[in-house]
Amino acid sequence: MTDLAEQRGMETEIYQPAEDSHLLATVATEEITADERVLEVGTGSGYVAEHIAEETSASVVATDLNPHACRAARERGVEALRADLVSPIRDDTVDVVVFNPPYLPTDEAEEWNDWMEVALSGGETGREVIDPFLAVVGRVLAPGGYVLLLVSSLTGVEAVVETAAESGFSAIALHDESYPFESLTVLKLVQ
Image (cartoon, rainbow, N blue to C red; front, side, top):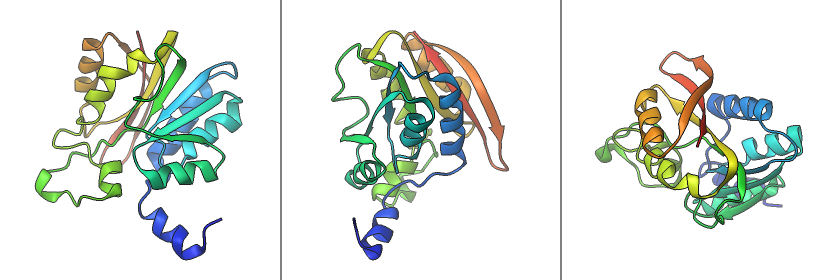
């Protein structure tokens, strides 16, 4: 167990659960069944992966580029791999991929170059992590598999749906929630 000062320092390096995390976790547990193999990409604190595992009894593995996030997820009991998106996952092995991507549009001049930036910034369009994810995620999906992707109105939900279509996915909006500065949508993407 880490001491309190180290834990606080680590928390400033990890995306902590917020409204988007809670929404994705709730929708995921309504969709996922116990017999499915689930991958959460960009797990952050491990909250969503832990919630899915506890609520559905599904087999859950997580990835994150941030080593602090992987450690935090492991402390929650989540099997976490340090990886970029789905890179270490074998082809055709996952039933459900869950992702709350970095989606805040950020001007390059305003970026602050640390782990929280990696967790939050979607680049200039808000889709600079989403687009590469959509290009590779189909590789890891087993037949009949699907993606649960959280998207913000700040990134342009229609633009994400169009990019998903270009990668061979059809999109269904499962749930929308409005907040003062954005709306959040959980999309189900099916090949």
